[in-house]
Length: 600
Ligand code: GCU
Image 1 (cartoon, protein in one colour):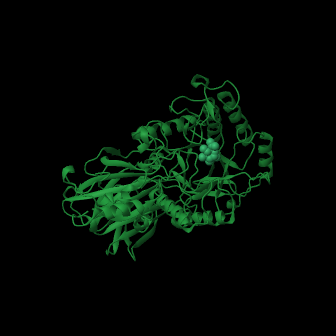
Image 2: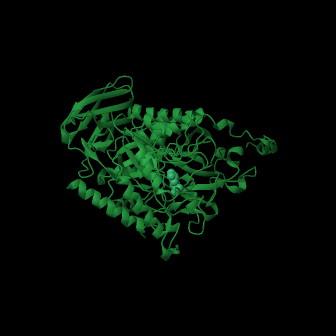
Image 3: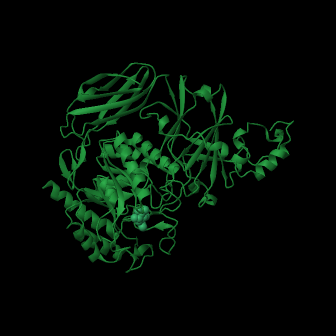
């Protein structure tokens, strides 16, 4: 505020203006601004940021983002937060795990820090990249609103070049985790509504001409002898160089209208769970160069078979959330190693990353370890399928996920949703997402976790017409008491494509943790459910995989009985991520037996 301006008028405007968000509805940041970041040199902005929670969006109303540094005694107008003289929080983090006052907080969180341009590498261009911020992130630099990103689990990039000035630049983020009727997911989920900037924040400093995106994959024609590379280039140069030294590939690509592509004869060693072979490759464009480590494999369906590199496979899976007793939704190498270690111990060759894009490190680790992945966008339960802005949000989250992970051999399935109520708008909305999958990546299979049709007593979701694999969430033994019905559904169903049981399970608390000896929520009841489920599922030849719900107990505020206390207890392992329950051993026996049969 300037001295001659009467701040009281502003004061009343702040109090009475309920259309304060109007200036911040435009400039939606989407995958159109994608920046391929694997291997790029980055300036990390992780660490201490000024932070305040903001339940009433006072920061937007009072324009905190326009404040500049000042000694407190020199500030002319009273203020409710000073981004330059504030408590701090560590980025990446979820505010719920940093401050117990904010455990159930749903509102805005303000993050602020200064970037000195001289501290960045000298470069023609600078891009801000945020790995994930839940749910909406408004970006301000030096008092100017630059744009907003929607979606709690995917990365986004924003060019800062024309906005950075010499000396100090004030970067502020307003991140809110409100649950609303038009978001994706909507306002009702069975997982915890973490908020905040919970993945890495970086600045990439690049030459003028850059590689925006690169997608490399085996041509899925059953020949295993051609590699296709396609790239998006941002610059005026007419050529790019693509190299896979170990395969003797040094290909000059012609660039036209910002695009380049080639199909190159090659017979790489194929990636598979038993042989997770990866190749180092690079794409150079002028002074810019990006690299990646990519596995080459083919995944397709043939009748009710899932076929990897020409051989039918059975997906020995487990579902996982991104949730930790101490970390919340923040990724750590240790947590990933533990997750994959327990999956391997269970005998898994497949993990369903539910219900949203997990950290990009998960797919990179799965590439190295040889574990196939199901990746999913949070089109979960009820969504406003008639809302075009909601559809654009869902489609953009899916495009950001696919662009981020389509070079990951471990990812074999893109899932467009989970347990959605059927309707014409839902069918159109989700078919549109399946079309996006095929547009951005014709090399993978599509799916969704559907429900059994109880009026037909069969697997009969019409979405099955457009997805490659029918995911089925069935809880016979838990939400559905009658195993006999499960047998009837199995017999009544005659799918023309593979079915994967994407969820089944039961809550359980072990006696040592206060659990019952018998009945629902007891470990013995969980054991019975898993035993019966395996007995029945083994009889269904068109079932080509299972990913039981779920590896670990996870936070879910809907769950408040005396055993749940805000956690979903269906984990095969308890929330301590070490105590195994009966279901773990029963599934492990089944999977190890299944693996041995395949090898014999
Ligand atoms: C549903 C849903 C999960 C949920 C689970 C449960 O199938 O997909 O997100 O946690 O069932 O009820 O435990």
